[in-house]
Image 1 (cartoon, rainbow, N blue to C red):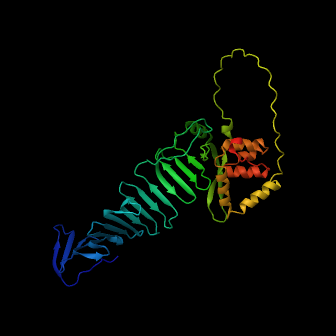
Image 2 (cartoon, rainbow, N blue to C red):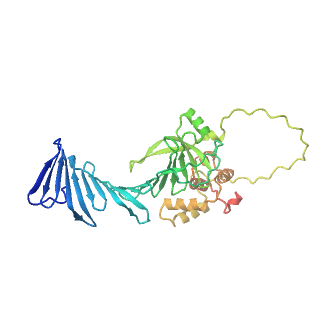
Image 3 (cartoon, rainbow, N blue to C red):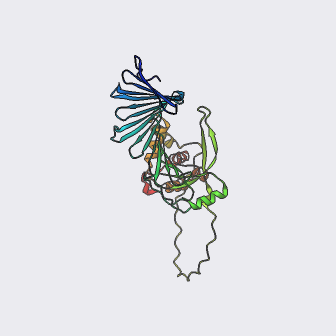
Length: 370
């Protein structure tokens, strides 16, 4: 980049440092140009207007890097190798939400990094679709219910240090290990996939250290959870994106644990009168695999037609059953004749409802009746 101003006329004075490493030339208008190796510094006694501020010093370095200093204390540095421009404000500038910004870095691809008073950093992608917020200390409280896990332990949500936000997914990173706890929240299903830092779930750590399986804890909106293990990866042939394929770990349905100490023999119990056998409602015969009962199929198609796409329909189903306890929903579908293997593969309420509909099973209107 050329300097903002080159003096006219003839030089009035020249000078040189005692070691000969630095020399300078002073011009008629008072401008001084100092040279030291590959660096050239322009000093203007009368600052050069530049918008709402004025340039008082300009430096050129080897490779094309430049530094511009302004009369209000601002400083702008340009890195020619990657096209990055870094602005540091002499007086912090207020943003639209009232926060005071100290620095902003503009990258060549259009992305930017803002640094605020207090140390908070905010990275925004070029198209604005992704933001990454880095806090000076881990103090963001992740407020979601979390019940006892299948491993019979209840981990505690850690304080969050970094948050990455996209329209479809939020990532919350703690500062509790290396790697830290990573909470991935789906904005469509509101389910969580959690990679816990070592030590947060000791029983799970011990088991998976032995099996060498990659695992996450899947948590629904009510705080109920299940362990998922990685089966492999799958690549979309159209987009080329590769995603992990997960499955529910059946180990925790009947985990192996040390045999308990024998309990003392109970005192003889008083005989009780025989109770009549309970009357159980027979489960309806399931419809053929892949088929819906005509009534359910018609109802689903009618509701589906009211939504623009499958994602919006998924959101409708998830929202409709948000107050239904997850485990009771599963038990209900099983009690109505759905195959256990298919129910076990359902990772959220939408998948469970679709499984139920395939076998002509309709959820009750009242979640209390499950």
